[in-house]
Amino acid sequence: MFCASCGAERPPGARFCPRCGRRAPGGEVCREEIPTHLAGAILSTLLCCLPLGIVSIVYAARVPGLVAAGDVAGARQASRSAAQWMWWSFGIGLLGAILGGLAQIA
Image 1 (cartoon, rainbow, N blue to C red):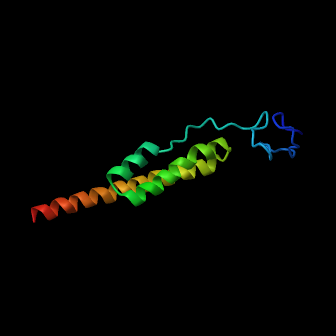
Image 2 (cartoon, helix red, strand yellow):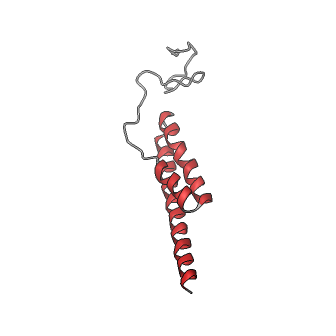
Image 3 (cartoon, rainbow, N blue to C red):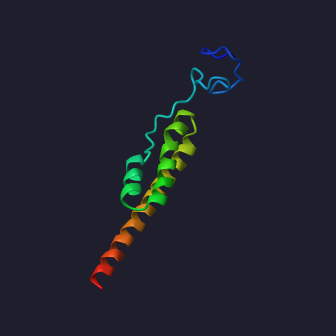
């Protein structure tokens, strides 16, 4: 088999061209909507805990590329990791706000 885009030889059963990376005709396409959690990651970075929010942004940014590459399992894992780090950032930011408020009262 040869790639229709670049003409490179494609191994039998390959879903993508090894040279140009284009999807082979008839290749599987992910129809599942996998959330990136990018908006929440950015908000938790700006408003809560910067270091954990940045980790969340990195994982959230990986999701579309993994879906495009056909790695649905990897995209799901990156999505879960982005959400997990986002919530940790939010929790630590909330805890900091509560402790700061208590310090003002005391």
